[in-house]
Length: 475
Image (cartoon, rainbow, N blue to C red; front, side, top):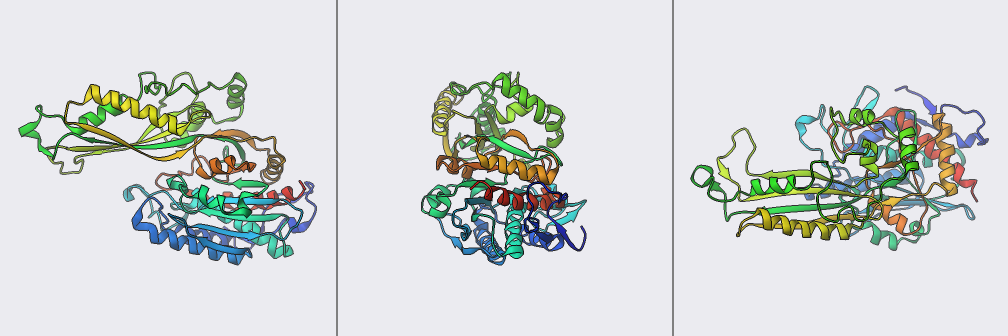
């Protein structure tokens, strides 16, 4: 890891950024210690039992922004979890950059699948392992460190900066739009930078040109007034688990396409040019399977795995539960079953329209599968529209120059299959977007043993620092 100060760029040759102050230096051990503290806080926004931890994490992050030298730092309450903000706006006539990130994290999942405890970060093989290290606390600290080092080196920033760090991204950001509507400094920014997307691979940066939208749904099957004895009633009354399984089986046809009528009505196939670009620059099928630690592919035939995960919609079963599956399973017919669905949407698909298609399909499927007395209900959660991001804006060129300087190679232009609710909101506000991520495809985001490499952290500080300097040249 090293013990001294290190420049944020590997190559300090003249790349048109002549001032030495544009290469601020920082101390890696201190930064790693900060990320360890940050990632130790279990800021799980989806779990009400961790609401206090989310608040504690917000306070920690606000303290870090103050130490960086930002002004008007605040922990702003919403109807849910708070938003952390900070500003430095003392560069009249220069652009304002909105730095967005999220400090909430996904639930860790089964503890037994983690090599080390998820909220006790451990440095191993050049990476810090722990929930939230890559998604999104490491990238947040990269930006904050870049801001701090500029201020330490020169007493000022190359541009105006507004930081907005969300505590609800992992639950769809339900209150961020209302917050931004009332926050003029953020709402009127000239460009927003988001580092919540992956690089192409180690050493090859990426600018993301599109994100899928998301719609979440919970299906609940009620088949009886209570659990029943499997011997006394098996074969005589319907079981919620069997009906739930039949519903899941009906989501797709044998070719891997979603079987819900009308689901593809707004979906356009990728153009030949898009497919050619993907084949040349995007991950191969083998790359994606390797990152997933999977031995075989699945999904809509006729498309590469990259196309399936970025340009095509999908329905994923995130969870299913009924009865008992423990070591001492009970011999019962479950009265209730629950299915959690995650629907990923592509441009032109609208979450509300797809929700109605699912309602109609479910009513028809329930009629066919479930006898009288069985009820199937659906409730919808996150609604986030897909986003297409232009790379024609000068800010994209600024990001490309910064990334090229840091990594020694130009960024790949590619879509991401993920969803960032804030990006959809910022896009609707008309703020130009730059999505340059620092994590790697195999950082196990949302999975056990999440990690963020020290090389990614170091390069992230570099890219953020140089991006601010490049944006200043757009005035």
